Length: 420
Image (cartoon, rainbow, N blue to C red; front, side, top):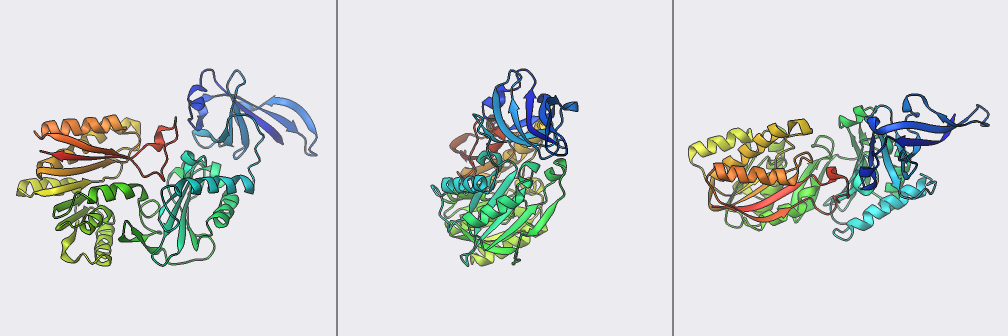
């Protein structure tokens, strides 16, 4: 039996941790020490060095630089390449990871959101490492029936270990009508965890309707992408919609039609929503009905690349085009391929915009950083022989805070530009 487990890094591996990075990778660990006890709990060996720099999965460990500087305390996982995810950092306080600890973390996360949202809004309540709760995602959905539904994702052993405490804290602080789990992301398997979905506690209908900026949207918690809906674009949708009055609008990669329906709500005369998914197209039609859009909003099930190419060949024109694609790369090695994909859709969109038209274009891959994305737009506008005037550079809503030193939390880029 081991207690007081201490992880010591290799030389010079502590710099990014000191800057705010919350992960320790397996190749960064030099050795692990622990106090060993016999079966009766008697201290028998002091500071034994563990073989192969390993500790039991789920162990609470203190992390030090090679020279002995304390860096933080986290959870150890041999299965994952991210061997330690930090829960705390700073001075050693022998933190107790009990119910009170998680109550405070959830309350802190809520207090931050209440600067920008009310409890009558839908927003991301917990954004994993950026809220100092590694691997944990919690969405706060407020339905039109004034019920609060939470959707949770336990994506790492660091939060799975405290599942009971976290669920209890969510119930205590938020008092939701229901909690639905969407721990079905493949990253759980890399953490040595099984996939898990379904209601936690009492069951309810996973089809809910929310109001975002006065737009009604039906969301499928059980089968929708990730946690059912992308709350991070809330303020960007409102900004884009403000430019759509009287315009013909193309909402590409539309998902459930949120950008397009925001455009309709602001007075767009025609909106075409394009998505390759038949389920998404059906959801767009349902949501158009909820907002009494009639024939003003039309769902098209098609590959966006093909649709843009055909629209150019037909000589179609739009006054506003919104591009909100899924991440074209989920690894650093595929950035070159992703660059080509982003460039193509933006170039083709620029070609079918009316003179002086507005392009709202996004990237949600953290590997594809902001400067690389802006470079795409520069090259696309040059090859399309268009002038590009950037009006706004926008990011995720403030319920998705960016943690200093952890670039992965700064993932969403949104540019609003005029094309002439």
